Amino acid sequence: MPLTQLWGPRSAGGAGGRADERGSSSCTRAPPGGPPSLAVLPAARGRSVAAGLAQPPAARRWGHPGPEQLGAARPRRRGSRGGLCSTAARPAPEAGRLAAAGRGMARPGAGGALLRILLSQLPPAAREAAPLGLRGPVAAASYGTSITSAKIKVNGVPLHYQQTGQGDHAVLLLPGMLGSSQTDFGPQLKSMNKQLFTIVAWDPRGYGHSIPPARDFPPDFFERDARDAVDLMQALKFKKFSLLGWSDGGITALIAAAKYPTFIHKLVVWGANTIVTQEDLKLYNAIRDVSKWSEKIRKPMEEVYGHEYFAKTCEAWVDGISQFADKPDGNICQHLLPHIKCPTFIIHGGKDPLVPQFHADYLHAHIKGSRLFLMPEGKHNLHLRFAEEFNRLVEDFLQ
Image (tube, rainbow, N blue to C red; front, side):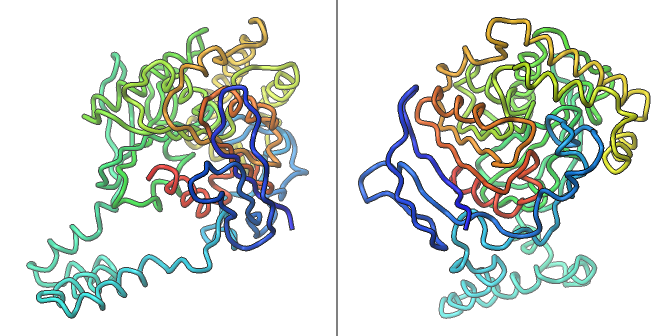
């Protein structure tokens, strides 16, 4: 059975600890009192994420595009069984709430709590038919599960965002190239714990519904996105928040955590790189011409942007990201990594054809105290293909 590895905290440049490899169905943890060096878990199972490998070159709808990823199946709601950590003893959320309410019946007034929980399981139409006095408490029990969309002007640009949840811990989701809240984070907006977190997903300027302005790629476009992202959360009155960044959004999140440390609580990145290599340039140029993309991937993007804007912006992105190859060592933001002080979680897909593992290893080696999680069956869009496991893993880290 392939294994998924969780590398524990390490000092910048230091070596990882000794592994305790056990092919069991539950996480292997370090001895009490000592820092976890390596936990070994069974890989997520389910339909292979290698599906669609033979598709013609196209760009990823989610994050850095590349020929191997194009045409990969979108995530199914059922997810993969087995998961990133043991789920055998984890009750379903509904069962847990009902069991807790049942235990609470011995307390005075607990019958109302049970009724509210039972009522919350009804379809919306049935809840609306309930007596007025019950609908209010039920709405409170749902913890704001609806997703709202709005725009707010930040640094002179109307930025679009989606928001859900009523938790005390604010989290910002940062999409990849040509990505948006709508295209990149559906499973996270829908299913992350809304009792614990307030989740915001944004469209960077020139992407998604944050148009106008048209997207451009000056030399500092990642720094500009990082500033916009932090200022957006400040405009929404979140004094401190965590960042979840995918691909280009991961690069933006790394920069934001390094340059605005007082605002960042925790950081999660996947599919991110801090340099551009000659190998990366080949992948980028392979998707420059969107007419060569598979229709399965091209059509949804054209529905968001229209063909002309989509094609033009894709070419501009290739030129924009390629300019970093001309810098010493192809540097994007590697010089900023020592300045990241917040707890950092790096996730990498073992089958990511777009971002080789050495990028994740480099992040882990140069962000002090960071953790690295390797998902053997994960590709670039692992948070979509294995959404249930991804969400649970991230929630555990953020708590």
